Length: 526
Image (cartoon, rainbow, N blue to C red; front, side, top):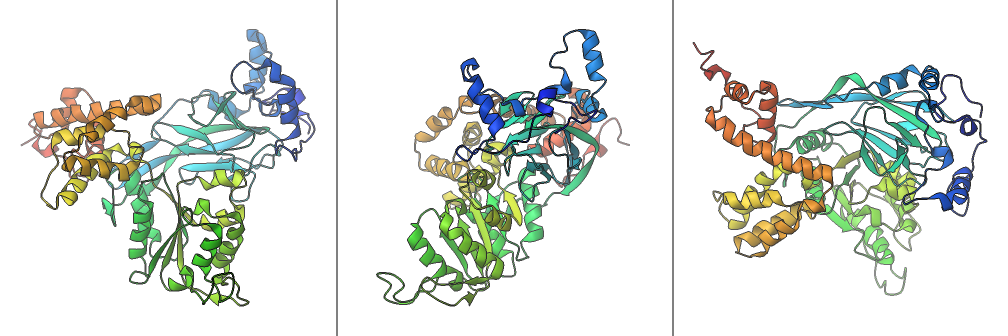
């Protein structure tokens, strides 16, 4: 492929190399494989970047003198110059009933295929070679689901999705990283630039703090509730993703209760708990004599749930040989019992749940791409408890009253503070168990919280948790000292009033529906 004028972001030898093919044995492209073979002896602790994937930002590989750098920079496209001069800005702005999320653009700087710039319509842009990717690249070194670029709390994040050849940011292979000004992203033989746009899109926040039995006042949960309020009444297939213990089954049941199928059967199938032979019979039923031991006809769960909802829990564990049969059921709304020659129509809504990222499973050929496309009609991700620590106090209070059998019971302040210290790898399920142990006087709670120290977390997560805890403690003393008056408290703390108000709402120190109390300000009162 000939190098394109004005788009040189890699060395000429890479830009003019012949198209690559994938090795049948390894699944990697031939030029990536040959590079790895030729550089094994030069590795120094860490994986080397394949030649086809090695970024050379702004084409400055050999530019050592200032004059050379100026000449090279003159060929940098305008979008890249904006990227290199990019200054971080806030990516999210919270108000009482909505969140404004910054929009961004991803542009191909160099590579075998340029589909044109892609601008975000939600808070993420997926990158890969498969149909359905927002930025679809025809690059032999790019996996079907290669990476995702998304809006985080403090900036843009790039996350690899288990790609074959890896995702590189500023020349380093990454799994998940926050983008810094000037970073370029290399996927396969393609170099990408990301820039924040000057506008944002508005996403409504739910006014409720629970959806069925699932609780949450944090922004992440209120965004999730808002989306589910819009889709629950439809028959759309929903894919629930989240770590173990985040409440996927409870959320699926709540969706069923909010749908037009409420009152009809809600059937749960754990795809990881049954062997493949038994699972097929459980789902689709079987005829008499279909196999040894089938002494009578059996109706499957899809038929028994007629008019209702079927939850396929741990859908990522569904055996590959059963996936085409499930896909046919979803597309044609029919099932065929084991040993039967005719199909039976079924009327069910499907909700699937998994603790795995199915896009990674597709890349690893552990899950069929066509079934994933069909399941991914509506994708809802339940955040882990460590990413919504604002909800812990509410959850502890709710569990404490429920387990004590007294709606008016309140947990001791020391217990809430102890629970706030935990990292809760088991999420809500583990937190509930810890509260129950505290009620019966088990001593393991404090030991468990101490064990879940900052060393179990990344540096960024530990720093964020410590900052959040300090901010909440500071504001919980600052606001009462000024009779809850936000303006006076902001002046005393020498901070922006709007920022203080937002932090107070974030930490539950004021109700989301409370109006500012500036009318009581001594300096402005009549």
